[in-house]
Length: 230
Ligand code: C5P
Image (cartoon, rainbow, N blue to C red; front, side, top):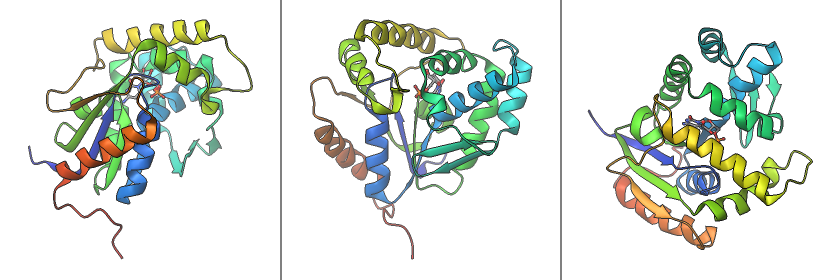
């Protein structure tokens, strides 16, 4: 399989720093940034809105195929609705991990994600980007951190606050349940690709993580252009 010369895959569990790192990388390289988790969240949001049972695989796969996703900077719209905040609630955390277990839903979203990478120059973050979506990505990074640290980060992340304060213990147990679901599901579980660079971000300031990842990615991209053409 030919390498996707200008595709960067960032994988890892929740709270490992993927979002911050992927955004910074895309900015530095002049690439597009896509958060694939927002697509699973968007499908879960649409299913809840339509009253579709979250175990109805075919109905949810049909929603995933038909959904119109619009990415505008850090904002995402699904079928014309800006859902940026609505998809970051604790309820959507659970619903997204649930629909992500369904093979037909994954198949639909993976094909949408590959289409987004057709022109290259993309940093995509998720759980299966380096293993399934773009196995030939030029650079693959797997970010991890201790469960305690990931829960602490998630508890203070304003994107996930949804106007509520949650006890750290609640955040930690919800995170653990979701991680277990992501790591043990049959369809594309979260795993480290053999050719991915594993980076443990526990106790490392996020700025230092970005610097390190950027240097690895630049060396993997080799001569690929990093600034937007024209
Ligand atoms: O990354 P984020 O936490 O927003 O993703 C929400 C959920 O979507 C994850 O818990 C996971 O179940 C699912 N997901 C996935 N594959 C991806 C991205 C996200 O299964 N590539």
